[in-house]
Image 1: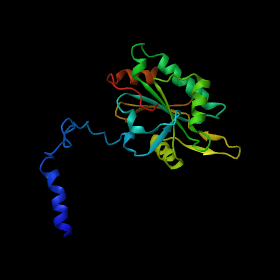
Image 2: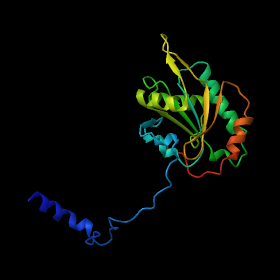
Image 3: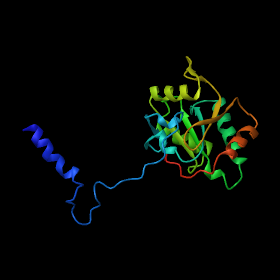
Image 4: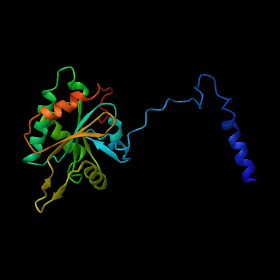
Length: 208
């Protein structure tokens, strides 16, 4: 009975779903596939992250425009505010008509303390734009995975502070690493040159 029942249940689907209530779109409508991701795209990871407004999103939703990425934590007292300022300097040095086409992604390395509420407070304290800056937190294992992919090292000390790499990564619109800037207070010219060499992207930030 079971093989026969299975075949009977499959008949409507194999016949192209002809019996549709009026006004409802066909169930078998073909959707145009997007271009495949490059092999080295960061967006291949399947982890889900939470934004500063509590929205759960995969990192891949940022696909569509280049991203400047940094891994920080909000209670950092020295390096992280400088990293944020470095990101500001980079975006401010872009031509005015390109600033909205580059996203900035901050990923927390402190998932225990950096709740969505803490991320929101950090955004307000640092006056980070809503339309181009995305703040995300993830599970500890997911943070380690992304850190490994980006080459970011971090270690928590006995005071609850983190020693970490000071690294800004430029991803192209498909999530491939095209440039990395190490250190604090670096000149913006090298990374600006790489940003300007990228094709004009499309899309809007989806982290909020």
